[in-house]
Amino acid sequence: MTRVVIIEDNPDLAVGLRRTLEFEGYDVALAETGLRGLDEARTPGTDLVLLDLMLPEMDGFKILRELRRGGSRVPVLVLTARSDESDVVMCFDSGADDYVTKPFSTVELLARVRALLRRGASDGNGSVPTQRHFAFGDVQVDAESRTVERGGVPVQLTPKEFDLLLALLRREGAVASRADLLEEVWQYANTDILTRTVDMHMAELRRKLEGDASNPAHLLTVRKAGYRLQP
Image (cartoon, rainbow, N blue to C red; front, side, top):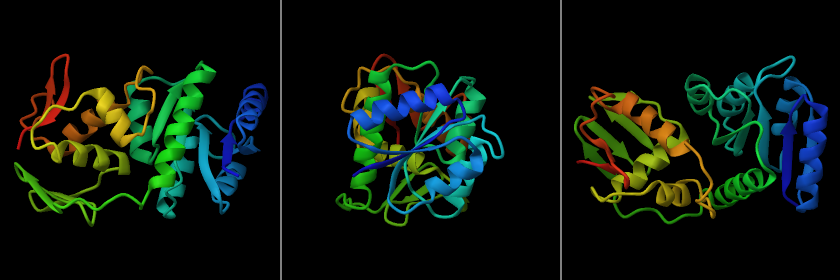
């Protein structure tokens, strides 16, 4: 049975989430503090973590960093009332896979949960792309080792930032819509759900890989169409 860990200190919300997920057939564990949540998230067999940011003992950002530092690739969906761009960027930089802003609908939450579980189940099982090495500007990308260098200096990308970059590189300059990228990179079956996830990740890629993030030369926006990578 799929195991989901909920780390949330609001008891009403936590119990409601547990009932919703158990009704969908998931095995659910609850944790009301950061330290207990980190232990639960590290438990073998955990398939997904729903993580609040503001927690007693240890906040959600530190939980994320501890998980990723320890090598865990368990998908993490952040539940947050903090919708400021800086907070969202910090979530992704700390290792989050996606986020939803409170209050959220049950339909949206379950769609995100299913998408992240599909991604987690397929990790490591996809086909290896024919092309291993890519380059644009002063950026070098190795798809097999999942490493990036800019001007010969290693650049640290989050797993989702790297997946998004590869999705654009493989299109060889063709436009990718937000819906296409949500489906390919995040495995969203319902791409009608409104989310700024793609836009936030693109902003971070530009910050890390472009000379001028406000006037990008390679990671381009195509108005009303999506994004493309100009080699």
